[in-house]
Image 1 (cartoon, rainbow, N blue to C red):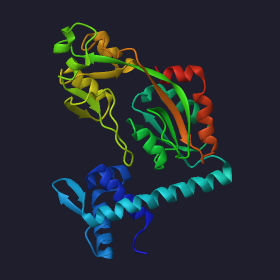
Image 2 (cartoon, one colour; image 1 turned 120 degrees about the vertical axis):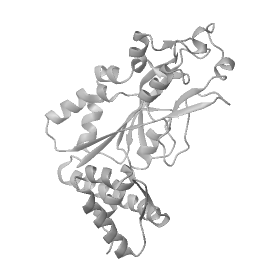
Image 3 (cartoon, one colour; image 1 turned 135 degrees about the horizontal axis):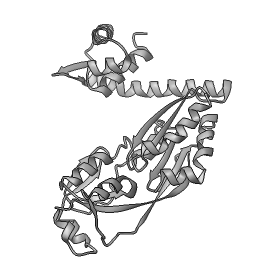
Length: 300
C-alpha cells in the first residue's frame, strides 16, 4: 500500500499548519525531510498533493480529496486505539476535551493538575470550540467531552448532555463608541445601526449559528474572545461578552457595560459526552466537574 496512516498524519499537519516549516516544527522534523517525504509520496501516487503559494502549502483538488477522506481513517484509527486500550485497562489512550469559548482555559487548569497528579497515563487533548462547533465536535468524533456547550443539544445524535449552569452576557462598548452615551435601555433598532463583533462558529458539518446578532446588522467576525474584546475596545464594533472575560476591561475603563432591551437573559450551557464512551478518564472528569466549586469556577 502506497499510503500509510503516518503519511496521512503528515499531510494533515502540513494542511493544518499552513506550511512545511510550521508542520516540521509541530512534528519535530526538519523541513527538508518533510519536503522529501511529500515528494516521494507524490511520486508513488502519481499526482501532486500540494501546490506552493509563496510560503504557504495549499492542497491540490486531488490532495484535498485524499486528505478529507484520510482524516476519516485517522479518526477511525485513533478511536480503535482508544477502544483497545479501554478494553485492556479501562483508561483511554487519549481523551479529547473541548472547552466552549465561554470557558477560560486557565479556569480549567486546577482540574488538569489534579488529573496529572494521579499519573493515569491518558493523554489529554484540549481544544476550544465556538457555538455549534461544540456539538459538532462531539457528533463528528473530534471530542469525547464538551464543557460549556451553548445552545440546545441536537436531537438523536447519541450524545448525553447535562445542564451545567447558565452564563450572563454583558453588552459592552468602548467609551468613545456612540452607544456609550445613548440612553438606557438601548433599543435593538439603535444597536442594529452599529457593527457587531461576533465569534466565528467552529462547526464543520452542522449549520453555523450566531449569538446576539440582529438581522441586517453589519458584522466583524473574529476567532476568539480575546480578539473580540480587543476589537470592541478599539471601537470597531459592539457585542456581548461573558462577565468574567470582560471584567478586566471594565475595571480599567477600556470597555463599559450598557443596558439593552434584552439585558439580564441567562444563557444555559451544557456538559456533554458521547453515550458510547465509557472510559475511566471520562468518568474521572465527569466526577470532578460535578463538584460545585469546579462548576462555579468554570461557568459564571
